[in-house]
Every structure is written in structure tokens, then in C-alpha cells.
Image (cartoon, rainbow, N blue to C red; front, side, top):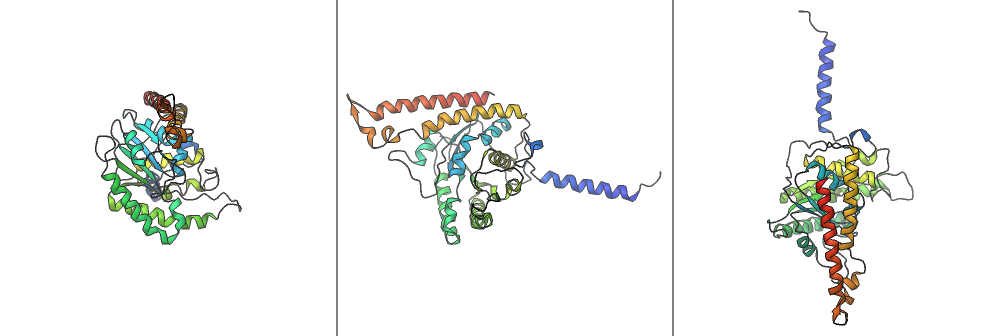
Length: 325
């Protein structure tokens, strides 16, 4: 049998190495249409397991709150786990920190809302707002995060035991080449120790971490703008975030773009009803200082609580529609 050209052996070796490298890389960037509709399983390591009928609640800052407008994370989770009957409620609130949450009188505590939603899984987004304390604030942030996780570990909002928690690091800034915006290199340097603190505390407390600071670095450097101002993500950025999240969970989505958009439209519609329930218009009358005013023996609180019941039911029905798609 004739011997093979040595160049053939070299080509085979290079192909094997290329395939191995590609298997480790998550390639769904902001402007990469070829990979939309697919997820790439995470490499071997700790796994987070979703359970049937999990109620997932998002808590944290504007990164979490703004997810409701785009719906990508829930859309991909529903397609990756179609038989799980997942529900998702966004409790994010702009400017929230671990120990600072500004609310209208009577709004309710985080625990009360988690209990109302029967949260069995909590996605936590903290670190960006706290990062303005600079390097000197990292230790306090890490201590507060550890206390927060231990508080959740002692709670039971769903009747199924303590919620399973997922920590998300803040994503890196995007360089929009705009001299009127803060220097992204300075923002990155400020955020990096806080992202590391999230990773470290998560590891110490045995909590799953989605490292957005690392996973989105390449995506936010792509040709398509993923944010409004280098920080607040737009649709392309939130799609990249959702795909990075699924990759961290080791989940895969094979649905068509059309099917994803159909689900996403239903998710965004559900989120609008939920927002009206969670952030009820005129909270001063719904649960605040004027809620105790009585007219003909009936208080504002008694009347307007019925509106919240109605919004709860609309949210539930839309969730059931999403689960059936």
C-alpha cells in the first residue's frame, strides 16, 4: 500500500485541533446571524439543573429589569426546556443594590414578592451599581453578597425548600467609540474586581455563576451595537446575554428564528401585564399612603387589590400560552 503524503497527516492534525477549539467556543455574537437559533453546551463543569414547574424570579438592577422589554432569556429557556412548564417573573428594579432598594411605601419586601411568585429559582444581578464604590468597596460588596445568599438559603418561597440561586456577573462595557460616553477601559477596570467577587463568593457558597463579564467580551466587541450607551443593553445585547446564559447552563436551542420570535412576542406581552402588576401604576393609592382612604366604607386598598388579582390572572394565562407554544 503506498504511503500517504506527510502533508496529509499535518492537515488531519490541524483539522482535529480546529474542531476541538470550535467545540469550546461560544460563537453567537451580536451580529452573527448564522448561530441564532442555536445554543452551545457548556464545557464540563458544575451544572445547574432546572426542575419541572420551576418558578424563576429575577432580582437585581436595571440589567435584570430591562430584560422584560426583549424577552430573549425566557424565550430560549422555554425552547430549551419545552416540557418543564417554566414560569418567569421579573422583579428587577433600576438602581437596586444588595442593601439598597428604594420603594414606595407599602410596596412590599423582596421576600414578600418572591413568596407571592413562589420562587424556586432566583437569578441575581448585582455588582454594577455597587462598583461605583471603587476598589475600597469590593470587600463590603462580597460580604453583603455572602449574607444575601445565606439569607436565600434559609428561605422557602415555593414550599419546595430553599430556592436554587444563579449569580450573574455584570457584563463588560461596550466601546461605542463615542467620546461623550465614559471611557470603557475605565468602566471595565472598575467592574472587573466586582465581577471577580461574584465569581469568588459564588464558588465559596456553592452557587452557580453565569460569568457575563467574560462570556460577553467578544460579543460586545462585534460590529453591531449591543447597548444604548456602552452599559444598558438593547435587543442584540440581550440576545447575546441569553445565549451566553444558555451556554453556561449547557442547554441547546434548535428552533427556527420564526418560532423563537413567536414565543418572544408572547413573552413580551406577558411581561407587560406582569410589570403593571409588580409596578402598579399609582402605588400611592394601591398600597401606599392613600390606600387607607375610605369612601362609603370601602378603602382604596380593597378596591385596587382586585385590579392586581385581575393582572395576576392575565399574567398566569399568558404564561400558560407561552408554555404551550
